[in-house]
Length: 413
Image (cartoon, rainbow, N blue to C red; front, side, top):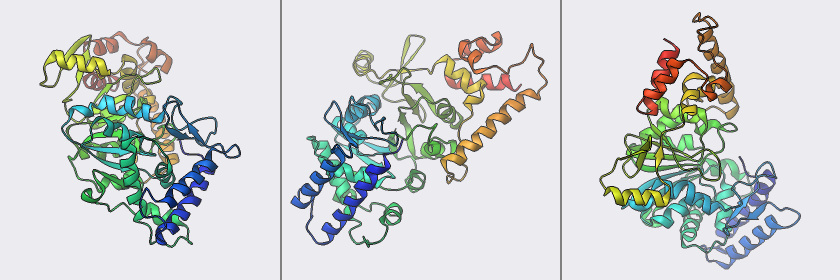
């Protein structure tokens, strides 16, 4: 979901003021009185009864209203709480001496704050296409030392644009430029304001330990859920590197399997379905639980590791039988594609709809009679009311990768 356009228009107005104050030296750092006053005015305007676009959540952090003003960008439980439970804890970032993190759709920086709260030695590349959400975080007063680090990084990012012509439309100027801050200047955080598809192509291969994938819902904006983008992300991961996403979308998980990720279901955070956790190769720090038997993939003491995972709800489960069947047997399992990494959301969704129709047609022309047909409704696939041979394949498969491959092979035998 996107921030409400009314809110972004207001924030954009304050960005212009901020850039002018940088130029005149009224603002020199995040502690300047000019920035403190500007921030107060922005927050007062966004929280006023007339505007009412900025909401304080239960953990004391703030979130914006989305395009649908009845819906928030984060839950009322708290944006930082979400970042800790959905990303920092499942990543087991605290167990790593140091790590490189890619924070996709960083927004106001809560996921980065959450990871830093667990491990201050992380190097974090933050990618966010909305400059307004970056600036809003710079103006918020959240009493956390991790937020201070994020604010320093965001200030450095905006300070790089203090020479642009503020009388012109700043949108195009800012979206095309990247932060050129260095690690030795800006600590362990870098900020990038552009389409993640563009940014990621410039990043080194085999570099990231963790990707926090916090993009908008794939059903509404699938550009960061396509096979091509996730394949690009796979190349940027180290062996054993992991992707964490709140999304449990079937086409998203299907794309991950198609590329070669090892995909698991993580804990459920505020919803019925668990989060998605995918690895390039075998997990290093996590315990995999299959058929109630824990398979310890790391070299830590088993009891210590089991206790650690139990306390932090980090066990990895094989994805559900229903998801396996939907990915392999249903047109719902057709992933999104973006061959040149340049399509709009509408184009990606339209092309997938065509592929779903072709999937059905390919089954139909195989000549199955009504009795033997493997063309099942989504309801029957979910309920497991399908051919016994298919169910036996699923039952006897060692993992989801093997299961899905065998089911697909049988489907188009």
